Structure formats: C-alpha cells, structure tokens
Length: 178
Length: 189
Image (cartoon, rainbow over all chains, first blue to last red; front, side, top):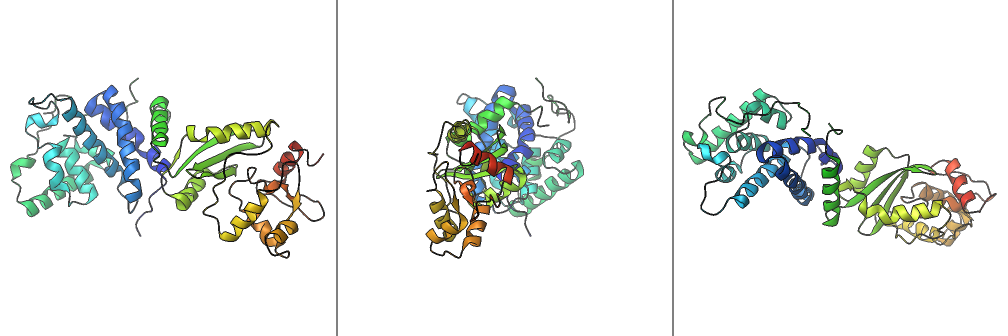
C-alpha cells in the first residue's frame, strides 16, 4: 500500500533544510531565501493533489529546481546567455523537463538534478534520501528510458568529467553558514 | 538540523502560507497556560481543536485526516484565540467570541455541543439535563461520551457538566483541570 501523504508540517520539517541547502548552492544565500519560500508555497498549493506520500523529497527538489530556473530567467536581461548550468553544454532544465515527464519520480529527479543542475551523484543521493550508487542507477535508468522513448541522441546526456564544475559540490553535512 | 535552520526564514514562510489562505488547519502550541500545554487549531470556519498535553504527531495526523493535509504551525491565525484564552484565564472574559468549528463531528454530537454552548460561565449542568435537552433523557452516558470527544474544550464548556449528585465525574483533560476551571469561574469554592 502506498504511504499516506503526511501532514504538511511533517513534510516541511523533514525537507526544509535540504531544500535551503540545495537552493543556496544554486542561487547564493539571499536569492535562496526568497526561492525557499516560493518552493514551499508552491508545494503547499499542489499538496492536496498528491496521491501518496512517496518520493516527497524528490518532488520538492523538482519544484525547487524549477524555481531556480525561473529565477535565472527572470534576472537574465533579454538576449543574453544565461549564466547558470546551461552554459557548459549541458541540457538546461528547460529542455529536460518535457523529456522527463513520463519518468518515475525518483528517476526524474535524478536526471534533472544530474543533467539539468549538474549535481554530483553523492549530492543527488543525499537529496533523494538514498545512496550515491542508487542515484547513479536512477539517473542512468531514466536516461535509458528517455532514449528509448524519444530517440534523444547520447550527446544530450554526455557524462561530465569529474571536477569539471568550477564551483564544485559543497561538502556534505557542513553547518549552515552564518 | 532544526537548530541551525533560520528561525526568521521559517516564520516568514509560515506567515506567508497562512496569509495566502493555503492552510486547511493552522495550529500553534501554547506552552505555558495556567492549565499546562495546549494545542490550538483553527480552520477558515473557526476553532477546530483544543488539546491538553498534546502529542503533536498524533494530533497532526488526526487534523489532517479530518480537515485536509495542509496542516501547518502558524502563530498569526491563532492570535485571537490566544488572546481570548489569556483573558479567560485571567478572569477577564466570560464568553468566547471565537466560533467553534464542529463540522466534522457526527450530527448527534453537534446537537449536544450546541446545547452545551448555552451553559453560561460560572454555572453547571448535568449529563442527564443535557441529554433531556437534546431529546433523550436516558442518554446521559452518550452525552458523557460526546463531552469526552469534545474537540474544543474550555470554549465549548464541557467542564461545566457534572454528575447528578454534583460530583465532578470526569474530564478529558483530567479532573484537576476541571476543578481549576470551575474554581476560576466561581462555580465551586
């Protein structure tokens, strides 16, 4: 039987720190705080439509990812190239989103976080409440499924070399920076 | 983890969630009333919950089941209830203006609770009398059960209902609290 949707308070307390950490890495602290509120307000609006309480962490991080994209788009003057993940040839979340729609939530989140947001598998594993290995597996299963459904070329999902991300993944389990 | 989470950011989100009208139930915990820790919850319709010595996890599950899953702690929507309770405990309020929300109660319970709402400050009635007023003089025990499941004690004053012989009989929050409330109201010495 599927897990029941928990009271919002329980959901919020379980995931707020992860969401803020995720947003902090993508947007910097000030923007992250606004995005944090918007993430949970959107989650709250959509909450009554949830059918079960599984994969809620993946779900809320997907919402946060969309807000990061909106934020980047909003701050980007017309005609200029975006500054965030898209630049380095990785497919932006924008292009990824429609492709991932048919995926199971865990695979979807893993694909989006890996290829749209360039998180390391260790971070994704942490974000999804599983392991690095499971995150890698979910992402590759998701990509296989997308390819078989859409025939999307392998170049769209080219694996990046480790260490190619100049900002680097933040170390896990560090205290919030004050 | 909770400790390092920014309290200002947290409060800002909770206030925004309430202000946008997105909550099925807003609740708060009053840690130090004269009768101990209380949990109070409100819907758009009024006060839906007042619990003594709450076990938050169980309470939230139940509120979500009854009213919807968007249950969130938020202090602003509870301000009026908190103020009225403060005044009541200080002896400066004899009647609550906040409306009880008893929609989710069975029809019989709603009838009994409506009758209960008419028992004035400082007065008592009996289980049998309430039973008679709601149609069945022999249903004193059923009335007792309704009192026991009263979702908003104090505001719906089940503490004013006593046994036919004047004994306090029982109280969901414990007899000490019943005695405290009746003493506060001057119903007993």
